[in-house]
Image 1 (cartoon, rainbow, N blue to C red):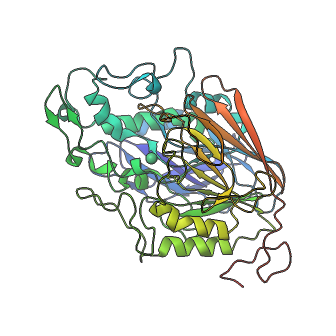
Image 2: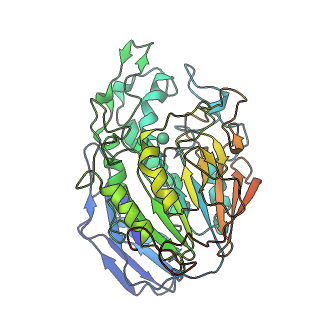
Length: 472
Ligand SMILES: [Fe+2]
């Protein structure tokens, strides 16, 4: 377990005290990871706790937090991952495109020079963070499929007049302020639940550069973006995903096991391999990645990772990839985007059960399919992965809208009018349920159960045992 926290001062030796009783934090771990980046007000501290028992409740406290406050910080708790092969039912929270809530983010109002009813909460609604906190006892950890915080939206919020008549050049540090607020809002959940993040475009591209503030007659370029908002700097500084343990790369591609499930996280933004150009690799002013040591590192890693999954221990495989290739926001199709070219066949060959996306701010579920061909078995033991778009968690800019009633072939569900998050329950080795939760009141709107017998295609191994291409 890696414990990460921010402080306003650099820590010589960030330390976590921990133990299996809240009254006896008799173990400690330290690191020398306390770093910052240009324009950030905080230092980012990370300590990895090793040698923990699986499936065990631990209590912990961080030290070295800006002097006098340290003595009063609460003791938090977390539960370690279940051992691979543990077949007890468990539930996770899953969502994408979650940003700042409240006065500087998603609220009941937008600025007077932009926004729409699709970008606000109704009075009295709870937001996604509040809903996930209210139901925190119902899931074990949180999977965030990219677009984390949306601090780069500060510019759009200025231009829309949310913060009055100032123009953006007077307060560029508002981006970092939004980042700090976002972590404070998430802390009641994420101090006690692992927060597994995937990269999205808003971790790098600060893509509101180029907008014009008509009132001030200023056109902002990418130069406005703070360094931390570019090239995944903020994302890399604040999070430490288990890429070392899974031979992945930074927070970009990595995997981990929990009970009956192998989770894979990928990036659609850069490093697509085979000459494909990631959607934010080719920006002229804002160079992002690549991050692999060679062009095909991510796709080679994915093939190897899927091939080495022990499907006897972890029959379920769930992949996270921020950008979708199916969405009813573009019902005419996305014209075989580069990230689909890079990953769809590998995920299909690897018999992945569920692919989770975000990026469009809607909730959509698609019948299992591969390369445009629907799997006629639907949710009853399909060969192709079930595809979920889970991007309606919310941020200042609200939801996307479907342009018409036309639906992409294979659409099982499409909702562009509610802020939502999801719960995935792995009941056993063959049944998984996705529950869609309405953020406004924490009710379950819909649910679907995927049945997979996991009699995986025989590729040289014994029947029922996965044996991937690279191992056979
Ligand atoms: Fe996105």
